[in-house]
Length: 316
Image (cartoon, rainbow, N blue to C red; front, side, top):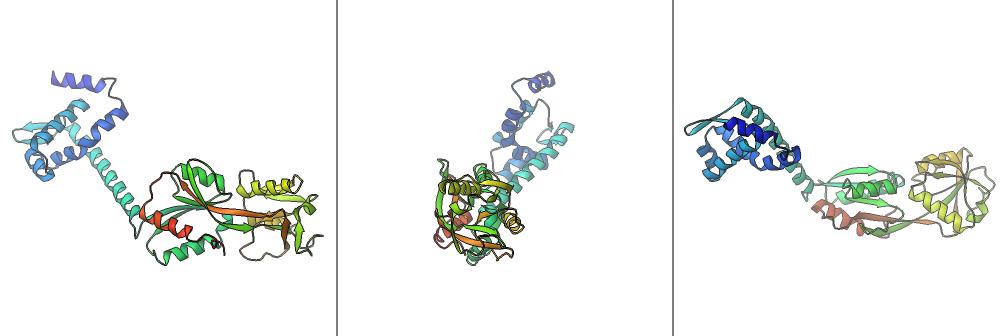
């Protein structure tokens, strides 16, 4: 009769997978303790819980599962075949919980924790390595998980919880994010070395209205800035190529495919001339962003404070 009732409980529509997991999870440690000692009283003493609490928990666990996990022999118990099957999975689940707990504790450790940090492609050659090197002078054990991508993609990962902080441009303005302006970077009009404008040092952007442009793809912050600056200069750029890397664009300019508005290169590149744009003012703002209301671990808080201390001197 008891077996029949438990079979009915197992087949009850109310015991779906998600509800069952929530129901069973708090009892797994109790179950493995009893299974290990094969004695309820001894297990209760080892786990420092009342024996009555442990007995009730095991009875409810079996009732919820609809199977007998233990065979009772006076004061001792032994696992049934179902109990042995359940024990193997329960031990794996508890081991995974312990591993996850150790991991999150390690990531939050002030001395050796982890910072998930995103940044623009154009800041990967010098800016970010320099920042991390300077920060680790005082925090040598802090680890970094780095993501290099364009601005919108990084903000998506920030919202998804994959990143703690990101350097991006333009500085975002959204209610779910907190953003702080750190610095600005001048943009230059990059032309082929044999171009008619190559001998110039300064130029108004309107003078390039008839040129073909090579730009980043739509969705990139620098592409939006390029479109906005050209519109301010009175024209819509004629696009010859859309790419994903600023240095690729610089190479295509050298090959004569067009001109481009780009930040300064990490090292001078042959085959191009880089002209200062006098009008409109051609700059891009660089800022740091994080999720509004998201609590910081100690290493994230330390790195955020460090970044904010570099306002006005972020870029080399």
